Amino acid sequence: MTSPLASLPSNLRPVGSRHIGNGQPVYVTGEIGINHNGDLENAFALIDAAVAAGCDAVKFQKRTPEICTPRDQWEIERDTPWGRMTYIDYRHRVEFDEAGYRSIDEYCRKRGIDWFASPWDVESVAFLEKFDVPAHKVASACLTDDDLLRALRATGRTVILSTGMSTPKQIRHAVEVLGSDNIVLCHATSTYPAKHEELNLRMINTLQNEYPNVPVGYSGHEVGLQTTLAAVALGAVFVERHITLDRAMWGSDQAASVESQGLERLVRDIRIIETSLGDGVKKVYEGELGPMKKLRRVAGVVAESEAEAGSQTAGV
Image 1: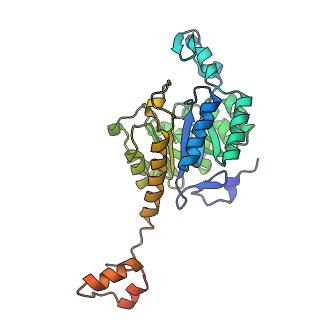
Image 2: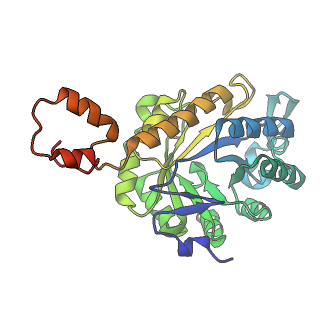
Image 3: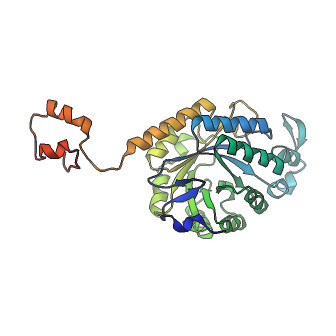
């Protein structure tokens, strides 16, 4: 396929009808993952919540259980909401088949929201390509899987790379395998929930400095919204948070997820922050002219005509 990246500025990445990068609205993704617990109605309800909140996309996780589950764990039994079953049976229970994803694809199109997924193996990449997804995501756990990265690069699509549980050397190698011209890097800390003192949000700036032509985002697994908003203030242009219908639901990711009301607040506040950041160029705004005339006793070195025009100033 012809890559849509060829005609774009080097710091922008296409995802559906949107672009991720500096100067663009923050791309907000609601990570459904496996919080649907294998139930399409749960998936649809989570999609509805993401649409209501104003998310740009929802994301799932796609695995081939026999590939992604270590063989010595297949027969281990565990208690689940569906009774006691082997781990491999559980892995199948929370996976949607092609018919399930056809329903998800149709529902997302009807609701007007993009969807994509994190494939955990090469077979899952081929599976997702059937749906013409707008992007792919690399889970932090898969950052070191060169075969998977090569398969994703071959799709020609934007690849969002999470960097949790990884060293700088491993990240550099993954970027080399994927190529830097089609990726979005996501800072992440892979604990669930992540401790605030381990979030290390300044890594967003470290990644920006090391990869100046690569958009940098944030994938959060913490409790609360404040730190995700701080990531946006630090320059994250992509944000992903796990979403849930109820944090008390069964499942390993539910407790570190955001419920619908929190998701609405998160998207609202992200939009306020990105509007408030501005362009970094000092100017006198029209709304300041009245207070300036009322409160400033000495005019200073700037001509009043310049201030009235709202022109850029140096030293105001």
